[in-house]
Length: 381
Image 1 (cartoon, rainbow, N blue to C red):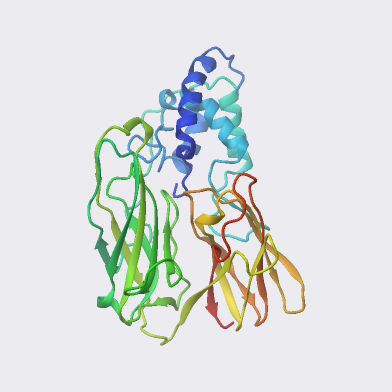
Image 2 (cartoon, rainbow, N blue to C red; image 1 turned 90 degrees about the vertical axis):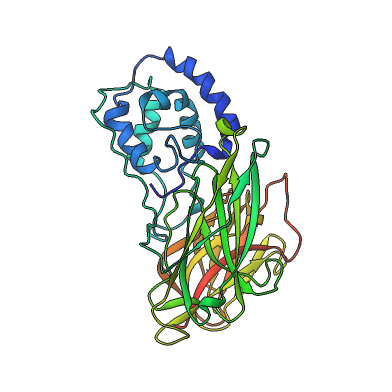
């Protein structure tokens, strides 16, 4: 599984529910026709095992009956609430690739088993779980080792920013960036962006990579790339969080970045990727928009951290005023990722990308000018 099918976003609450449910489930009658080893394990191994493994980022393994049963009720609650798997995009069919939602059958198996007494079934001779590939996109063209990050025993979470010069790659075009954690159990998320050297803040940054555990990385379409100009630097922000069962243990991580480049330089034989950004305050209250100046193709979108907890309905509006639903996003804090369109979306000059945002009552809208949504584009048709 390259999707982050993890319960760690609510680890503290789930810990309490998990231990309470262990005693409760022990007295439940067996009503489930599904058993762990015959029916549940094939799903959890394929869809959850990259995070829910003994040394994964999640604080509980879902790869044996013994380790899964205490979390059966927690699993059921998270699935019913739609929190797991943490995929925040709802859209017309076949809009996005690598969709991380469970099928109706998988959901039925897990819910029925969790509510029906969690029977073990026959233990297989061996549990086969394929470890995630070190570099799912293949060996990078270049790798950059990040400095070691020390998390002492009294530090459970931290965020660190590093700035790496890219002068050695000036003139080349990035097609993707991936991250390989040094210690998978503490690396929670990462954001990689390029900017001109000496810049500050997010305004001049171009997001070239978003990483969360077990997500499926992707490259820009063939021929496209983010240009690396002279004096460009790479800003890397990594969020670390220890598992609740290891919060008092010291930990050290040294992650590695993988850089992928287009085969051509400059604009020869390809196109440069750009982005539209929707900010608070560009339109009426609760509505943000960006206008396409030249014909372009939208290829991906990503919610910014500021929109976590809100519900965002994204539409395209043609120059003639026709509206089309692109996606509805319900982002959660800490799960920022790119949502890649299965097919590029043609945008005529003068078209708009418009987002209607419903903010939670507890937070309300952030300050005017705050970035809420990014849309990756390619020039032309």
